[in-house]
Length: 457
Image (tube, rainbow, N blue to C red):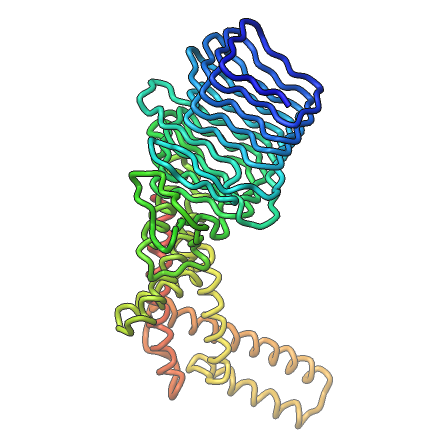
């Protein structure tokens, strides 16, 4: 166990290849340039609280095994200080609270889930309860700094035992970068602000990610949709109520996750959920990533469709029913206007199905062919010659081809409502062509809007 209180260090500090129960620095002053922990096995907590890093410009932890918590709380820096955690194994909570760092980089670390304590922290002058599921916490409020902390998360692995572990960022940052991480924890970026750049690329999110009250950078944002698709965007409720955006808001109790796939759409927070989707959609579109923008928009509309279904179940009105069913149909036909090719395929199937129906109701175009076919069959029966048989067989095949072609032409004509000449059919088929014409008009209108949206978009 190593505990330092009210100490002043005039040189660099290296703690290498030690087995420790606990490591603590409290109210200390660091006048050296470097503080490094390398290849240590620490069974207890590591804490840096209320220290003054006067000349320190590098704080590194590399290849350590830490069973207890890592806490950096209320540390002050007189110059730019980089914190670099690489190739470590963490089995408990990491908490960075109100520490004035320049850059914090977590790279190639493994995060495992063991039982964590519940205790209070002070953030923005208020007491908040940190629950056992909150495992990586980075909170700062240095919004007055010209260049607040940057946070980089690179190629880390976050393992989950309970499915409730959380990674939480709160405060003001210069940059936030998530790159090539495998994250099985919930990620909450609520009430954070990014000044310069925000990157989330090539990660695997196996749980939820929350952007409630997150203020994106006005300079550069880059978010690839494929890592977020599958209803992973969420909003969080605590004790059944949404936290005030003016505070960090985590008071007591476990979070209730509200995702697009399983959300209670009667909650007012459904609007927060849709707003998060809209923000990501705008980012993808602004970056020219049309494929990601389309995917985000389609999933956002699925959330909206579920909301209309909920509203109809609560109050059965024609408007809510129509909006619900229309959204459901748009999802099936064009992926909410993002996939015109899908509309072409669906329209082709409609034309083919009606053409099969018209095969059993010959049109006026088939009358002459039918008369010639009967004549050839009678000729074959009377003469029974080999040449007559071959000619008749060829004519039967030709007539069948023409009959199928006429049925397809009639179906295409009715679907596109070209309407050249009279409708060349009678009886029930005539009324079916009118119905098909209405269906075709409706589907082609949706296809046209979808195509124009993609071309202009």
